[in-house]
Length: 91
Image (cartoon, rainbow, N blue to C red):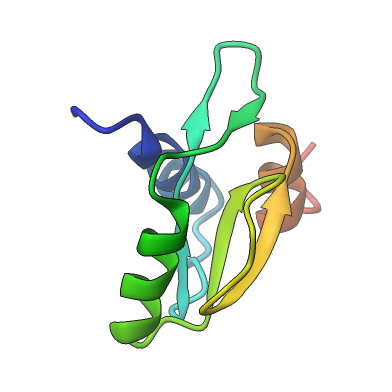
């Protein structure tokens, strides 16, 4: 994988597989996951959001600080926040 922006999408897929719960069908995810679990911004975020909207997506999981534009952005500070969002009952 060449693009670190795919980190968050891969993490979301793993959480989905672990919990046997599908991800929201109208949602994309992008951002870099640091070794500390912090979510870091991805380059070209505005362009990524515009392209996702063109493809019919309505929302995105992205690192905190990502400006919402073409679609609704659920900005998350850490990987743990994504786990809490996708699997709140996972302990």
